[in-house]
Length: 160
Image (cartoon, rainbow, N blue to C red; front, side, top):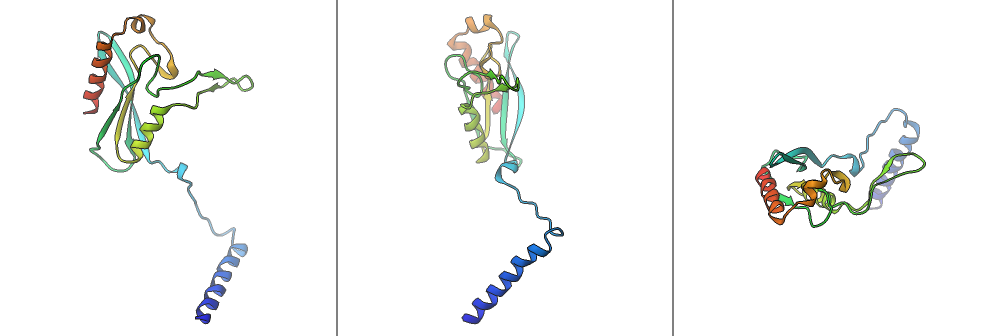
């Protein structure tokens, strides 16, 4: 038993020392989990009728060809986009770049489910764009519950 441990220790030591002498000739690529693509997405447009359309995003697992079980994320009440963005977009005074809020629960839910084999469709509420931007005040001011139900049904038809 002592001989096996001694041989293993010697072998490991030689292997470890070889990295010191041959470090320039050995190339290893190590990927962090964030570098691996495990989901993919497709930006889409859903036609709601009466000349209205909204932006949508279909999230899919990166591996496999489907069909996948589907999940439809329906925007909630109030002024909200497909990601259920919370907070406000602001401009960084030093760089002039946009700073987006960190709370985007539908974005996180869609990624989580797609990583686990689901197709997830999320869409902007009628009259809204990305980051809670009101695209059309007239549409937003005249929206009804029936409109929202019909929009969810049209989104579901796209998913099916």
